Length: 342
Ligand code: GDD
Ligand code: MG
Image (cartoon, rainbow, N blue to C red; front, side, top):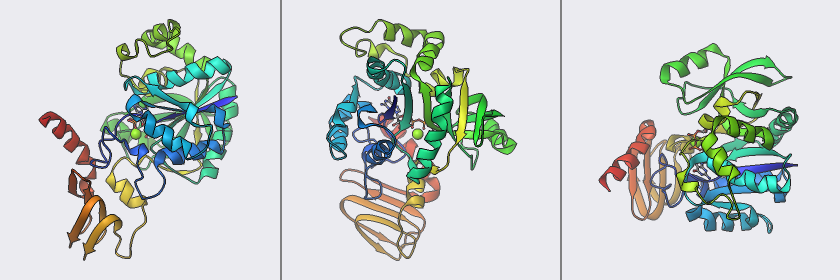
């Protein structure tokens, strides 16, 4: 069988003040519609059996995750798995693998982030259908996105021999390269962005952990009745991309047959959202007079905006952000600075 492992932890910093440690972006509705988590799970249910859908989240968020899962179906709640604390994506994935190998040690697993915009779902299912047989032959198969710009926040996948239409062996995988390197990769035309979605035989993945991440392997091998909770806090904070994918020998990439955006900052939310006649995205109790091209959101009290052009104004009960859209990338610095203050 094939299981879906949906990652719903971590805390968004670039969508402050809506996303906080208390509610990361995947648990929020960013456009007034369904939350990103519910969209991700609903999409997974189009391709996986409900009993094979797992959602890994931090202990603090597990009640919220369960309640969102309940809204999608009666048997999904049992798939919500709580990490004792955030230890990044490798540890989170292994928590789900523990449950999966219990049922089927020969399973395939597919990992999906929960905080991306993916359209249309049909194209996503086609991409998955292409990846599954390649994974079954003993590969980790990533979903690659054609790069639009030299973004340094992504993993880069260099293609090798073709494995059929829109599929390649991977020559190398580089997680978050520097600016110059990213520039050269995009210009070469030989690279895809890593979407963070990948499919693999669980056995192959665990062999790589055994060979390349002995600390995780030791933790996995010595797990007892208490499962993997014991020792969780002692694990290194390392993402699956650096820890396993970058070090894996048999990787392939399939080109994504869908539009993708990782909704990394307010600019993306504005770009993708519905707009009024003057190009404003407006949500909540907002009065906009003579505003243009702006993202105006209130989740707490009246927000009055006059004469704004290409601006972000986001108000919550206890915090407000005002910032030009062009500076949206810098919002994460606010969070950094606030932490320093605290
Ligand atoms: N359960 C759990 N626990 N989930 C986590 C944790 C954690 O400790 N940390 C992060 N996640 C979830 C996030 O919610 C997100 O859905 C996913 O794992 C990826 O984490 P990010 O923190 O968003 O990773 P990234 O954006 O820096 O990089 C990854 O995604 C890029 C594409 O968006 C990498 O896979 C890159 O290679 C990739 O290009
Ligand atoms: Mg991300």
